[in-house]
Image 1 (spheres, rainbow, N blue to C red):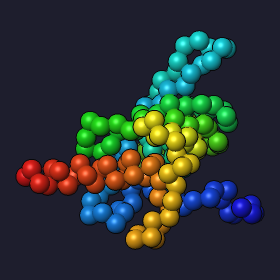
Image 2: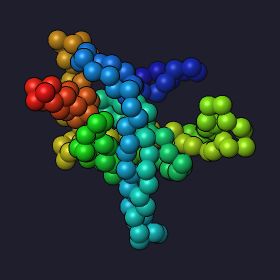
Image 3: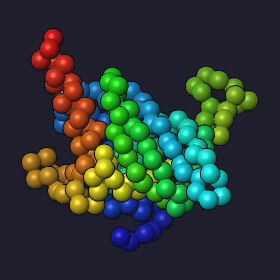
Length: 166
């Protein structure tokens, strides 16, 4: 991929978690994510902290949290599906982390807090390797993988089951 000013360095299109894919449901809630980092030899304890998904791609996720993560850090994620108690287990590696200042709407700058957008390249979802699942879906004319299926596809199935029960 050619990298130039103003272009993003990614192979696949992102799908915002607030998007409404071809399914008939609204994905308009923040998706909580529990992050866990293995401290390794330097820090024997695990670090666990909450985050929120910002967007997904066929092989990655962008999270928002108050933690700056170093590039190359391995992470374990539990993404909570909206309106359910189900989680999706994800394993990946931090590719980038960018600081931003977040001020709640209508609030004072003194109440601003430092937050970080963090891009993670996913290696496994629910124990299955991601790279082998990336494919072009001819019916919907888009790139797809177990990353997107585990979130959008699983959520669609849950909502279909609920509609049948009611």
